[in-house]
Image (cartoon, rainbow over all chains, first blue to last red; front, side, top):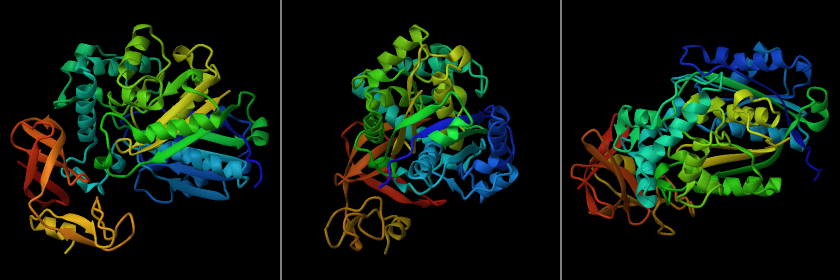
Length: 372
Length: 102
């Protein structure tokens, strides 16, 4: 087997996340255009593959995007895996480059606010309770009971992430909130209020991966993908052995850190898939950033010291959650952090970053390690 | 009869592989262990509540049967963790499976 080619994040583009009613094709093109506008050195004839990440029911989106962007790639297809479609597409692109099938791959993710990806129709074990607020309520109740965590404790995740999103010009809202605001927001279930939730929205994010050689023509600030871990436990929510931990996240994180030859102490900045407030401490624990039951302790400590290490762009709760674009937006954030290009969100001396993106109640997770 | 056709008649069954005898959940045409054909066990199964929450005045809970089958069901009384319950009503409505326990 040939030695694997090293893979670089060479360019990116992103749109503001909104509630706009736009065609998915238009949303998709906007972040790709932003990528090419920001990187005039890219020769579109050099792009070997175009991958589209989305849960939209619209068909043939990769060839459509390619045509709209003036690209005639060898490889063009969509990737769908609910909320972690974005990082699944990045992993596919990585594989094309690492194997030598492609030198340069454009990955564009997009979603509309009314994405069909919010509901997994197949999972009948959820009975009538297929909306994500129900699995999130079960996770929240279980986590609170097992570790004596209060609703006020969990509210800090939302307070922190909305505070951080205020520094993200592409976030769905710049509104900050207090613990009391979260506690007083609309009650969805006994264990979940509106401000505990990320919101579906319209948005797009694009990233260009390249081989080391191809990237030299485009960027002098390469960010390397050095670790990849993925694990799918099941598709159905009720297959979980525990509702207070994330097995797929734990295994994907271990694989990614091992591949990158790092441990959690080496990681300077992290994007966590905080679809709901309880997801952030559970994911931090499952990834090994804290002991079991103490994820919320880390969140509190970071919030009290205005340390943006976890979810600097505001996470999904602060930024919004356009499903197919989320994993790509997370990866762009870590790239900007490693390039010292994150403005008021910048984490000091960030050299190694981690992206955690998951789908369907953490039945499947992807973890990426990025380095400058 | 399939799991879904039984469920649509209000009958909750447990799918089991006819070859390796493992419970197959979620229900499927074939065993996810040995790909053997699946038959349906009928009975008055006892389940255990392993988690719950409430929306408005309605409690919903994760109930486990035979250590493998888990569903989210409605319950009219205040649930307790480890409470033993039985399916009192089930079916399919607007394409969605539904389960009540008590």
